[in-house]
Length: 247
Image (tube, rainbow, N blue to C red; front, side, top):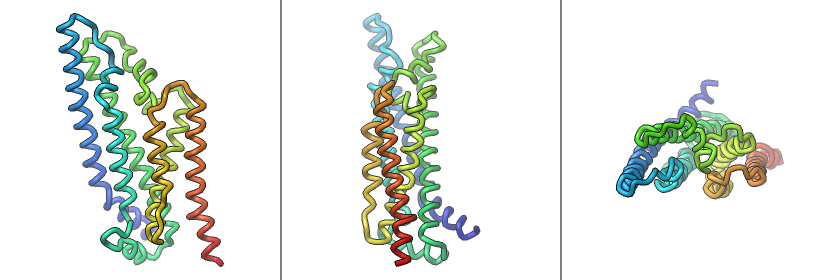
């Protein structure tokens, strides 16, 4: 068990500090952009004697989703690089621990899952803080303003689907598929191959994550695609490769 924990710690040490930097960057950039957008809205509303356009408008105008998307791509790239033979032969270090490549793959997938969940938690926390910031700055009196924003705004709703079970299941399958395909990228790199599953999953997330609310058919389709990509990945690493080794 100690060897397995050593592998997990080796994987974690290769990424954790870079991921923390990305989380700080996410918080800072989104906060600055949201502040500038909100201040502009407040100024226009004061000059024209109009009401504010609304919390969802500030999120959309501030391009919060695209900032989150960029951080997501950078984090995904970092998770794929850790353990790969780029520059240094990191696979040699793992081999010296004398555990199977399948075990390394599993621990890599576990760390990836924790990383994507941390990204979700940080982004959700930032979104909630920005919502409260808007309520305070705008003098919003409705106690339901934040909840309504999470129901109506595509990105916010995808972050916290509330009673939307199909989107919650879709998100879970997305995280699972992202985790195993990023781990497979490293596994394939050690064989001189290219794991393209993570590219497909990253594209799927960028296109569909902030999808329209109350469209379950799209969530079903994305869930099916995520599950299929994850299954193909697990089959290739855990079953197909085992059969090949026995031959």
